[in-house]
Length: 212
Length: 212
Image (cartoon, rainbow over the protein chains, first blue to last red):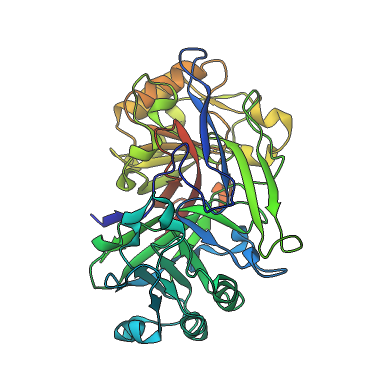
C-alpha cells in the first residue's frame, strides 16, 4: 500500500487570501433541512491556499493551467530542509547545493522553511523567507519543473522578477504547501493536481506525495 | 513513462450546471494590462462538471469530502462498456455481470454509456441512461469504493434512493467523466482528486487514469 502524504491546506470559509486577492467564501446553497440534499457554493481566487501558478499568471500569452499536461504535474521531487531560515531571510543558491544531485530537468524541489506554521496569521503573507532572483534563475536554467514551497510567495520585494524568471522558462510555482516536514530526506513522487480551469492563470491544487 | 488519460471535463465560464444548481463563473480579477499579473475569480457549485459526491451530499452527518482519505480516491478501476444503452434506458445488475470478476471491495467501476458526447446540450442533464436502485445496492453491497460515470447523475426519477443506497454505505459517486472510451478493457488506476474543501458535500475533481 503506497504511503500518501497530503500537502494541501484546508480550504474553509473565510480562510485568508493573499492581501488584495478575493476572499475564499464557502456557503450552503441548499441543505437536507430545506431540500433533499446538501450543496455548497464556493467563490475563490485561482491563487487561494495551496495553489499552482501557471505561466499565464505573469507571462503575456503564457501557458494556462488547463494546458499543463499531467506528466509535468506528477514528478519526482525532493524536499530541501530550509527550516533554519528566519523571517524575511534570503534563500540563495548555496542553500540548495546540498540537494543538487537530486535536481534534474522536469523534477520538483519543495522548499520547507517551516513557515506553514505561521498560517493563518497576517504575517504569513508578509514576513516569509524569500528566494533570490539568482536562485530563481538557477532553478529555471536547470529546467526544474515545479518549485514548491510552504511560503505564500517565493519572494516579497523581488516577487515580479522571481516569478517571471521561472514562469517564462516553464518552471511552475506551487505556493502554500503544508506538511513538508513529513517528507523526510529521500526523493518521492509529487502530485500537484489542479482543477481543469480553462484558460486560467492558476488553480488551487490537491498536492500530495507518494513515498517510495 | 506512465500513460495518463485525463477524464476531466473543462471548466469554463458559463459551462452548464445541473439544473437548479448555481452556475459556473470564471472572470478576470486583474490582468497584465491593469496590474502586473493575471488572476481570476471562480464561483462554482461543489457539484460542477466532473465532480465527486461525498456521503454528506445526501446523508445527515455523513463524511465530508475533505475527510475522504487519498487511498479511497486512488484505486484500481475497470471501465464497463455500456455504450449500447439508449437515452433514459435502465442499467441493471445484468449489465455489470461481465465485469464482476474485476469488482472487489474498494475498487472503482466507471460506467461508459457514451453520454458525454451529448454535453453541453440541455438533454445531457435530463435524458441520460440511469442505474436501477437494485444495481446501486449491488455496488454498495460489494463495497465498491467509487461508482463513476459519464452521466451527470446515476439516476433521474430514482435519484434519491440511488444516491442514498450508495452514499450511506460509503460508496462514493463520481459524475460527469469524459474520455472513458480511451480506457480500454483492462483494469487501470483511477485518480479522483477533489479539492480539500472543508466540511463540504462534494467537490469538482481532477479525474485521470494511469494505464498499466
